[in-house]
Structures are given as structure tokens and as C-alpha cells.
Image 1: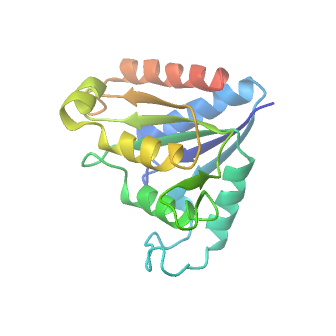
Image 2: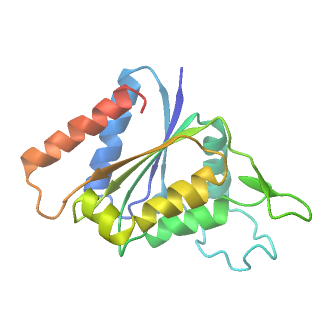
Amino acid sequence: MKNILIINGHPNPASFNFALAEAYKKGALQSDAKVETITIANLKFNPNLQFGYQRRTELEPDLLESWEKIKRADHLVWIHPVWWGGLPAITKGFIDRLFLPEMAFQYRENSVWWDKLLKDKTAHIITTLDQPGWYYRLFFGRPSVNQLKKSTLEFCGVKPVKVSYIGVIKTSNSNQKEKWLTKIYNFGLKNK
């Protein structure tokens, strides 16, 4: 049985991202996977990595619980919008505060190399856009995906990392949204 963790990075519970997260969860539960969730906006934590890596800030209880969920998971499903080409601030703060040296990765002494501490996990990034996914890739270079996929997840050993673009959200109608919800439900059903 696969352990799946859905991480919702949208701060607004009325957003379509919440419907996508619920659709994935329903599909995954239908497949008999074990499913846990993190709704970043509901966590109580300071998203500012105040001292960088010079001094460790104690992790709040919600972050400690989130880290335990990440450690238990075989598959991480990240659902978030693209805002100004990047992740919502609260999602970036969650990553800054939690994906730390000695937890997610470990620098090697006197070396530019590091050890990846989240090996044996896979991920799927489901991101919503107000432009076509191909446009975001070709004209903007998909900065949020590069940041989360390459500079965070793969840096820490999570591989492979699948990416799905959902959009154009702002011009979509209810029929299109239903198709997307079915698509995401099927990803959950197949544990993708």
C-alpha cells in the first residue's frame, strides 16, 4: 500500500486548488492508498527563514508534524498556483523552514557536494495557471517548476518528479473544470 501525502500550497480554501486536492485524495483513497494531507495555509508557523542557515530556528509543532508526514510518504503530491511565475509566499516559506540541512539534505564536509536524504520518494507537481502550460514553459522557462522540482525535490533525492499543468483557469468554464477534476481523480486512482 502506497503512502501518499498531498501538500496544498494555495492560501485560499475557496480556490480551485482545493477542489483538485480533494479530487486527487478521492482517487487515491479509492485505490486503497494511505493518504495524508498538509494544507500549508492552515499551519501555524513563521514562513521567514530569519537567520538563513547560520542559526537554526526551532520548528513549530505544525512544521514538526508536517515533517513526520513527509518522512512517512512514498509519494508527495504538491498542488499550488503559479503567481508571478513562482510559488505562493506561504508555500515558499514552508519549504524554506522545513527542507533543511540534516533533514532533507546534508552538505559534505569541505565539499561542494551533498547527500540527498529524501531518496526513495517520488512526487507529482500539479500547478494551476492563468496561461497555457506550453506558454509558461517556452516563454517564461517555468520558474516555479524549476524551483520546486529541480532545486528542492530532486536536490533532496525525490525522483522522479512528474509535472501537470492545469490552465487556463481564469477563462475556464464548469465543463472544463470538471474534466480537470476527473483527470486529477484518475492521477490519484493510479497513485501518479
